[in-house]
Length: 246
Image (cartoon, rainbow, N blue to C red):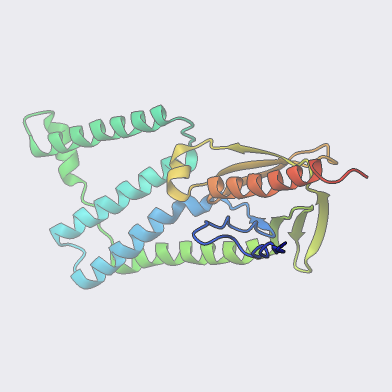
């Protein structure tokens, strides 16, 4: 006596307990920002100092001198970050080491008048003071520039898809197209400070049909963007290589 066995239908979804791989994004947007975005610590320091001065209501109080000194310190360090590049962690460590020595020496000379009395007098005479209007003016100016930057990047950005590299620019949304297969991507992090502030760096795109490289400065979240691009374009290359013969 023979029996017929019917194989069970294969499930359409993954087996229970299986971990699904995240879907590939349809596109990745890349925006090149101006370096002024790295002045946001000064913006925040001015905003907080303005609020403190608004509550204190007396710019001649001793504690307001401390607030003004802290604001000047943040502003000075922010200008150093804005003006110079720190390509290695060792240079960043050296900068903080020198800054700590200078600040420690200034504090020592100010608290001990017997050591370099002339310098002690100069440090005691340095009592920076500003009212809330001054700090809010700085924060307002920087805030207005940041708002203009956010509006501007809406009209100038790049979009990477599995098939094309698109450049959107202009008020009327002008569009340039480049082929994205075989797109070579180089990532550069030339400033440790800028990477710490906004996880930013430089992306260099080399389309296969273009002689010139496309350089995008100050791309925020550069490691995450580079990882997504590599995964998306790498999956495309595997698909093209393993396709059926024509």
